[in-house]
Length: 157
Image (cartoon, rainbow, N blue to C red):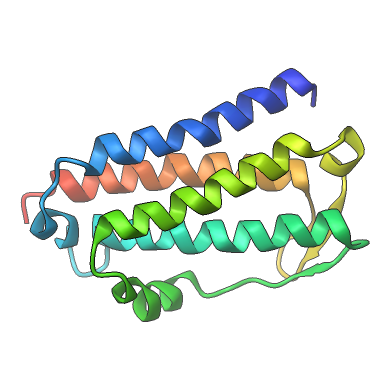
């Protein structure tokens, strides 16, 4: 991957912040907490998941950059949402937590050398994951969950 490609990924990671604000800024608390159905997360729960996932990404990236092939554990995303989403009452606080973590992650990624982008950790389920692969996952993860927020907010329930 070229530095230009990496720059495009970093731009996409930075743009997610504006996308989140655009999607959720005008929504009321009831609308943010409404689940489209019993099996789907509300927009607020998706925001909490994004913030928690950003914390996990931050840890994984830092482990990979500073250790030789560190183990990367998986985590129960549903369990985290069930346990931790309610810790923040205000969705703006959750977006703020996500933003702080994202800004720190982007700053870290911008500082990396080509060799560091190629470093890998060993995920317990997925095997070798390079920094580059994790950043690709972050971009796809953002897109998937932005779409999920759109669906949740447009749900008639």
